[in-house]
Length: 442
Ligand SMILES: [Zn+2]
Image 1: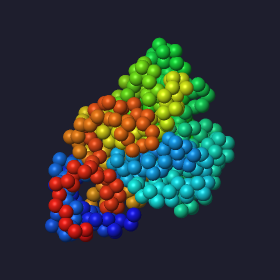
Image 2: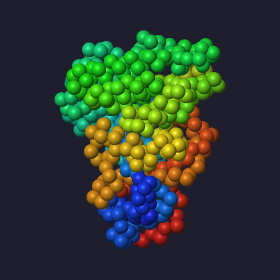
Image 3: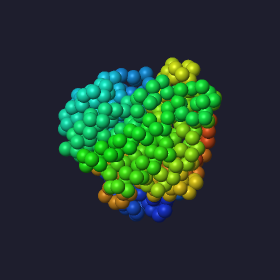
Image 4: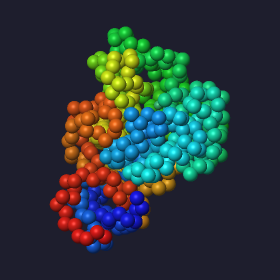
């Protein structure tokens, strides 16, 4: 998996960030040149006409399920799915079994990610021991381990105790870490099945009110401001959350926030069919929330898009709504949904997509090797997008071990047709190279 053994690639006439046309020469693990004249003999030629090149995508919020739930996903299958979706790095959430709350577990995840070698797997460390919310984990030991953890989260659960949250924010400051909060007041959401609103009232399902998210975000931005630490808010889902983040940033509080593709596209109306594939946490909200999330992403209030890829095996999803697990897979559909919801509507340019799906997630995760410019000398972490590809989502065809996608059968624009990790193609649509004239290996 060393990058220098990869064959050189020449991507001709590709649109960098959707605005300038160039040739990309990938050799020796780096972008060697932006001119085809510099391509080494034997380079694999790719016709980049009509394609957009972006810095390789980075997902700050992925559930890989290993260790413990290899029936749902493994680091190998999740990495394959990520590469197919255009990702070169994923941050693997800590809610595994055992929990990633020690240096030993995060090193295990990190080294398995390296063995697989398809994406860089950055383990997220748990904030509290066993995600139990009562005792801080050994965050410094995880930060100082070979995995060099910088993102800490009890995701799946909220760090609800305000004193513990304060201590965590203070603690991670010492090594440049960040706490990523799953903002959900547990008392206000006991037994919740979907968004609290008109639809939940009509269906008679227990509601998950917006205030349960917004009250935690309000508290945590105030805490972060008070102790002078940075905080990241996972999966914003409500219009009020966008307003609070906007207010906090205007006050100079060091907060970043993410939104998920499904919250940019779907509403709680989807629950009417009682199809558990639409059951997710935080839940799908209203059209007004979707509109506010799109506007917040467009104006920079929301910093990034992350997937919350949450694989579940059929037995946890093929059941009635009330019993079904929450979450949906998302690594292979994220890019297409962002194009559909944001690019094709004129809300974001491809340069903005590079920012929200690569540059800023890399910066939040203190990951210096990703989110780099498409420029000579930079690591050859590159995603090629075909914005004209109209493709129908087939959950059975995913590389993920689980197929719990709510997007089956819908047509998306935009697809990652190639992904390069330090110059090595980790995903390459066969149609891109079948007409090329390949010489001897470089
Ligand atoms: Zn979460």
